[in-house]
Length: 497
Ligand SMILES: O=P(O)(O)OC[C@H]1O[C@H](OP(=O)(O)OP(=O)(O)O)[C@H](O)[C@@H]1O
Ligand SMILES: NC(=O)CC[C@H](N)C(=O)O
Ligand SMILES: [Mg+2]
Image (cartoon, rainbow, N blue to C red; front, top):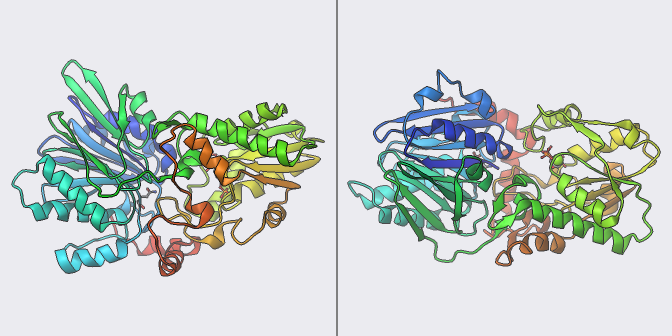
């Protein structure tokens, strides 16, 4: 998942973009970038690493001049994690456009060829986001206006919708003119915008999550609708239009399970409350299916599962304890690029407090079990701490299929639940009992926050993909992006020029 942000302000934006990106850091830890415009010139800085490591005050922040800009934190799902594929991307024709993308295109290979054959555009990296930028640029170029108009922007976004498949929430900046935000016709990835009144006039921010707006003093206006584009001109006028012919909400369930910050409101659903409902429903499942349970204590696996674990404990009337201390200087493990790194960091990140486990029947709760990296390590730690029985509950159903919309889970074979029954997974994890949330309950946990959200991208649980990719796509994806292929890729990738 990546985090994106765009600001049109009456004052310099670089610090606010930086601060906003730190609030979106949980969506991508591999690279960070900011591009600003003073209406004539662009300044761009992008670098591998966390936001705090990618920018220095004197050498970078002061040089990012202008009252308008966009930013990105990256969790790669295409190409490599090389710096050349860090975002925002820039293309100079037409008008000088920079772009930051959250999501993943599923037809980028064909589009890349088409861009060269039909449009004579060269794509220099393996990034799908560079392809997306060039499709948008080409759609604007076709209209051939001397200065870009809101109608041009909307027509170009409609062109993107026709040509691109997959997931894309985007912020793009036209150097002299303004910032556009748009969302794919299924609204798979989130995008929201807000405003802030100042003495000089109203400032606007577009971002992946509402928390980025609120922490910078912006008031939420609304989510950008699936298929819709919002264009905010440099002089602060807001234009909006639905650019898709058949838009509908098919938002990603995994945003609510894991990706989003709990203090965000996404498509009008409080993520925190959705996670509470997940915990409540999980407890009801235990009550229905394991009436005579002997759980002594419920312990969350920090961080994300805390909200649902606490609610589960309260519903069951079982005590809730924090049994792991999390090293606050280690980031999220799941979004780290390689399995070796992920495995090592679970031990560095979480350490058990033995006395909470010794001689007890412990129910561990996590939001999800994906590769099983976290759960396997944790179960071993808990056994070493002297637990009597180790039970495990997941606030989401078994993850059995790849994700192709912005989560880097390209190969089913890497998923611990793939082709395994629940009892086989329990054996693999080394637990005495394993309980998964039912899909219907997970979906209801979100729908109960906004009854307009009835259809979801639940592909990692069901293997059903709204954009209808065929087997050949998945086979090629697995070869390209499975853990083993990634290292080779870094060596082959483009150099940042
Ligand atoms: O089965 P796995 O492949 O290990 O993936 C699932 C785990 O990864 C995530 O935690 P992460 O450490 O990334 O972030 P968190 O601190 O927000 O929970 C998620 O919350 C699960 O704990
Ligand atoms: N996770 C994402 O949203 C990734 C965006 C884009 N596909 C990239 O790899 O940079
Ligand atoms: Mg976790």
